[in-house]
Image 1 (cartoon, rainbow, N blue to C red):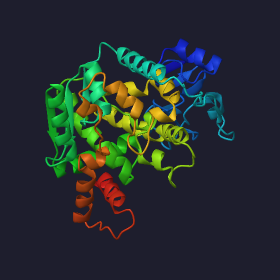
Image 2 (image 1 turned 60 degrees about the vertical axis):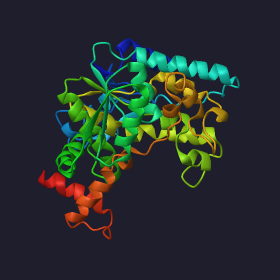
Image 3 (image 1 turned 90 degrees about the vertical axis):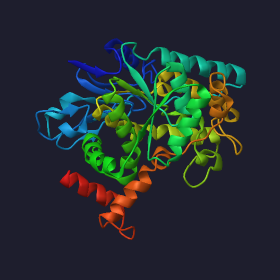
Length: 371
């Protein structure tokens, strides 16, 4: 039996045979030839359970009794699930490559630009795509190359709404603003928790803007939501990769960036499942294998330093975007949209005070019970 998302069976079989972690896809997962597979960055969610149940695996956790995420880059022999006394035979089949950095900066940048264009060209032509647009360089480059409509979500006085407006104006583009009210958060929290299987405050705060903008995009008749996700991890967008502080184990910028990339398998299922809960197919061109491969070859000088983060990526973006947009920093979506602030306020109004341990997560759980 073969049931795959994200890639053709032949591509996955070839990747298995050659142990090729980056076979030219935007991620894949599913069942092929009697085993489950999931790509090296976990871009497609996949869950299984070993307990006796009619459904042994699924793309969504909600349909399983006790879902367990298949680790990114792994395979699992389904025959092992037929015997409850044996452990599932999970094998780590792919690992993230670690190529030498390209010393030729111009060549590295050309390879990166070509990779990004390849990724954009492979977005399905039959999809009607809109872009979740924060006004930052990541989503701006995706929006420019896809030539797709722009949507921003946030509370009226939020940083992201203002940043998106000024960026859209600089790009000569129209922008749809999805203005939020506190009731939107209360309504959406249970839906997100059920779809993702997550109730911790940070995950829900991050997912809320994506879900709420996705609702509007879907209502407007689109099939897919494009995001600039992955740029911070791939190209050195985080302060910690420059500081090399307690948050990273690496001793070099490239090493710290690699750690960030390896954090993606934990994050991506949340965002993919959130988008699909709105009825939209997620599109993340910057997470295509070609872009990942090009990013892994960037030297420290094209990643980040104390003056500028995502240096090489910005140089590529500046060929397509106004300088003011290509150079722009952004806030994390839960803060830039003010969703984290408003969810905290709602939790306190409901009696979950900050002195309580993880008070927002407790509030989220209460909404799930009553929603």
